[in-house]
Image (cartoon, rainbow, N blue to C red):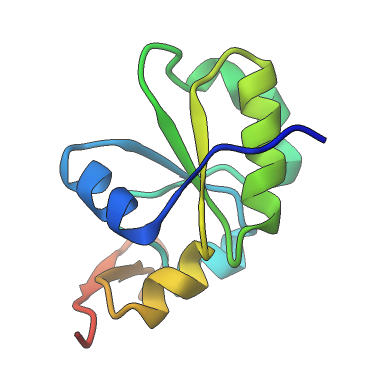
Length: 117
């Protein structure tokens, strides 16, 4: 197994502020309960079918709950020529660090909660 390139929570926060592409590979129910702002849902089982939707001209940051699924997804994306990086600690780490989180309050709506730093 190849070494998967990773970024930490602070690097994701900086990249996200600059409009980075962030892909959340968790299931829809997990995604709805809380995610890094701007993260796009592409569940791991469906990812291979949606590779053409991702850019090849800039980095893609992959996040899951704790890091396992994002590492798998990063390997898949990199094998397809996408400059992908797994986020260390995943969404659980993001939330534990007190960073802002988006949630779905009801179908079709989003809410952003400030972290408790």
